[in-house]
Image 1 (cartoon, rainbow, N blue to C red):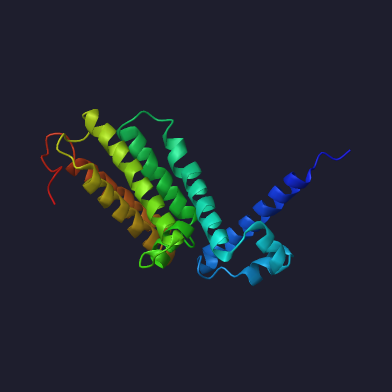
Image 2: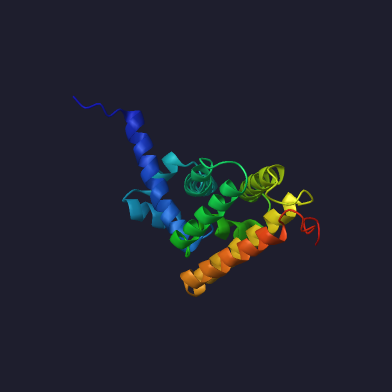
Length: 208
């Protein structure tokens, strides 16, 4: 006797659609996500896709959430196993670098930031919330390092988080256009320079 229920089958179909939508969004961006192309890709009708996602915007939001979950699973959650402070911050950056290796071409989250930064609406709000939340996570890791005495007491977590984020944007840029290994080397060297400049006793923490 089959244990597959209609609810289970529906959930599996939704996940299949979402998986294909994620792959299409990596290639074409969320704005390039076509219900027609997606339906053809999964062997369904447009109405079949809409039965699982009420609108194109609902599908785009679901893809964004799927991208965020993948990012957290690969970058944040493994780092939480390490002690608070520099070990965790280093792990976050190292995991983020590996994410850039895998998604050097087609990171849905970064593409979405460029697609919706000048717009209004649920997609813009979702992207902004995701990006702000991740920046706060980095700030939290930095603050723990300050509390541990691993970074200078005058360190501005928001400033250092911004600089780390800028390095990672540079990594994604160069990894997509040039050699990933070279981009990785420059990024990690830049990160180490940042840690030295914000080290205890340097007095650099609050300088612009």
